[in-house]
Length: 222
Image (cartoon, rainbow, N blue to C red; front, side):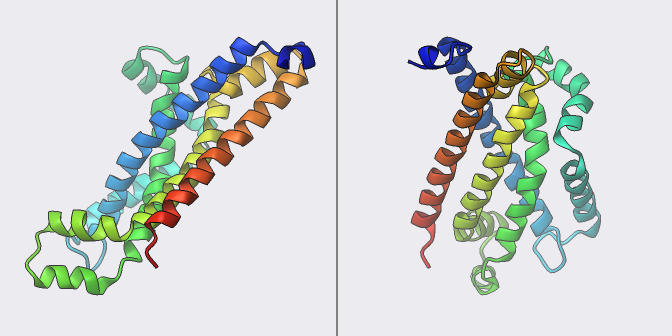
């Protein structure tokens, strides 16, 4: 039906591009969540008045986060070409986009994680300390569980940004809907392709937003 409505659309190519976008988004979302939580915990725990208070470490981690948050994503991809080629053996395709997607998004999510941890009731943390809880227990039994709604909300926001990043990565050969829209739509002046790619990307954003909001509501006990 699509091909009859828009002759420039190849259903197989559109499906493959959609799959590649989902693939890049999901894998990079997992990587971003892992590294973002680690960085966010470091930022929080090494800040003034917290368990691992260490000004030097905190400044180093904060500088790393701020620098990579400040670099525009399209430039970050180009800067990471040598690293990507070394790590993945190629600079083209969905897999090649993953390092830049994760490195570009994890610092952004780390700040959201830090904010979520700051909002945890200090009385709960102090009570755990008074009971002799170890640092690991405080992290995994108090801080992370208490901040789960904010963490899920943060990763939802970050994932929406990631979907946009995949489209930008596609413009320089990473595959996905961005690649299909640019090379088979824009460059060939076939704007039906661009339109359909845009519609699908918007639908993907709505799907992730709906799922993220539903999980956040379920976790929020307030």
